[in-house]
Structures are given as C-alpha cells and as structure tokens.
Image (cartoon, rainbow, N blue to C red; front, side, top):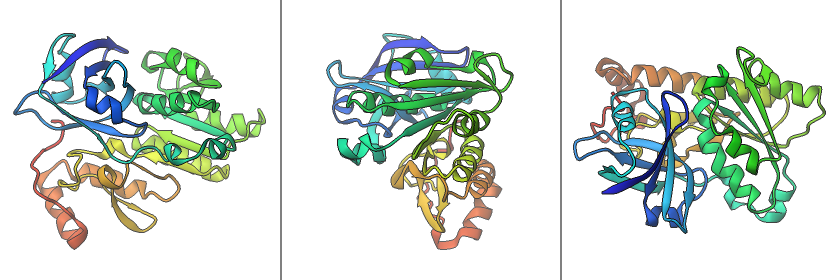
Length: 296
C-alpha cells in the first residue's frame, strides 16, 4: 500500500498527489512514468512522474479527472492509501544521457500543452540543478487551465504563457507564440521538447519543423496498459512500429505518424475497432490480452 502524503487541486479537474514511494523516488529520472492501481480490482493508470524527492522518498503525479478511475482517484485525500504504485518505467529523457558540456551547448525550449506542464517540470528542474538554462512555453485554452506556472518560474530561464482566449499572456495558440518568439523576438533554439495532447504535439512539431528546430515529443497520452501487452500505444515512427510504453515515451517529434496514432486511439475504444486493427496490422499488432480496458 502507498500513502498519499499530500494532495493539491490545481484546477477543478486537475490534481497533484505526492505519494510515499522511497524506492521509486531514489531511482526516478525525468521522462519516466509510473503505473498505479487504486485497489486490487482497479484499472492500471500510467502517469508521467511530475516530480520526485529522493530524500523525502516521495513521487508526485498530476492527473486530470477524465474517466471513472481518475475521477475515483480524485476523491482520495491525504492519508489515504492506493493499492499499487509501480515504477519508474519507460526510458528517461534523452537530456539525462547528455554530458554537462553537451547540455551547455543546447538552447532548449519546452512547449507544454495543458497537463503537459507536469512532465515538463522535472526536466526543467533537472537542467536547473545542473546550471543549464531553458525556456518554457505553456499553452492552455484559458487562464483557469494553466498549471504549475509559479513552480516553473523557479527553475526556468523564461516562462511564456499562451491562452487561446487571451485571458493570460499571449492571445493565441502555443504555436503562434513560438513563431513570434523566433521570428519577431530573436530567440534561437536548437532543441525543443513538446508535451501535451496528441493534436497539440502534431501541430507544434509541424511548427518546429518549419522553424528548423529538432524536437522530441512524449507519447504518454496514448498509453493504456503501460507494459506493451495491450498494444494500445502502437505508433509508427519514421516508418517503424514502436510502442510508447516500452520504446519511449519520447520520440523524434518530426517522425511520428500522429494521424495514424490518433485514428488508432479512436478505434481502440471499441471491440469492433480492436478487431479491425488486429486484422489490418497483422503480426505487428502485438496484443498480449492484458484486458486492462483503459480508463473507462
């Protein structure tokens, strides 16, 4: 059992929980994720680690209540326990593999869409602790959906805000602000990390490609089982079949087949859709029959 030591509502439907998990906290790195189950019969929920503290032995997650399991988890309070909390899983951020000298030569921009600010934060914090400066651009539909802005300002060189309705920061999409920073404000970047909804990552990657900025995206949003068994996170990257939970979750943003992945997400929600995918994908389908069913 794993104790919830701290809970904080970031918006009416987005919440942060700090979980007592010493072994995970000691080995976690930015970009990795955990799988939790509320109880023995609960669904497996893969969530990117939003922060970790090896000294305190805690791991933080940020979750949006969008389905039965995440809504049920939102009702848990400090002092309550969840059944399972497994990790760290997935490959760490590519930034963790670089030397301080290599990092010092990089001009990095992080682009976060909505809840994507949560997995962006530990990467920016990781760089800050090593004396590396990075800019962060956070986009949301309106100011009430912005999260972790104050936390990000403590570890980033610059934090830029874009809201679709203009209620905070730049009035427009994150891609519009990124183009303005580069074309009109003289900002130069040679590496972008993009995390958010699939459609946001698609169009932001299109923008960075046009701006000639190499980019990495995190495909955590398409995970279901988190172990490669269910096949839900199958994605084509540069013509090759990959699985976000075991091969990623980070991939070259300019090589991901976003349309195929989003189409697959939609079809995977029905039994008929799953059967059709299995027929179309043949031997590359990879379905171990985990029966997880996702967050219903």
